View 1 (cartoon, rainbow, N blue to C red):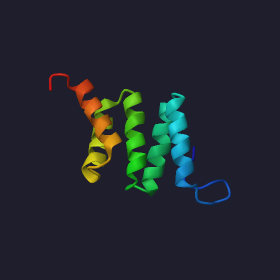
View 2 (cartoon, rainbow, N blue to C red):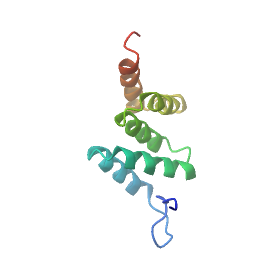
View 3 (tube, rainbow, N blue to C red):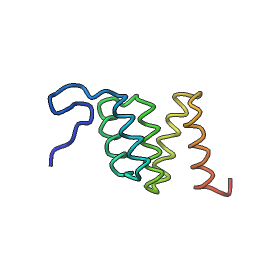
Length: 102
């Protein structure tokens, strides 16, 4: 089985980031969490600094019930972009759910 590149279409053209974001959000809305996670991870292999995709990866991990992994990813996003409000909201939610004693 060969790896699917989500950043290049069948004719070798670059897959637009905006299209990827739409696909990831649609996958999350339709409960295709594994697909969203795999697509985000594939994109991040080529573009590791893409904080928007990292955030969506964290959401997919969370919805797959992989909270500790999601916390690590979204914490990184928060550290790199302290003004990313959605990432901070997700981080707070994850920590509250994973560590209610805090």
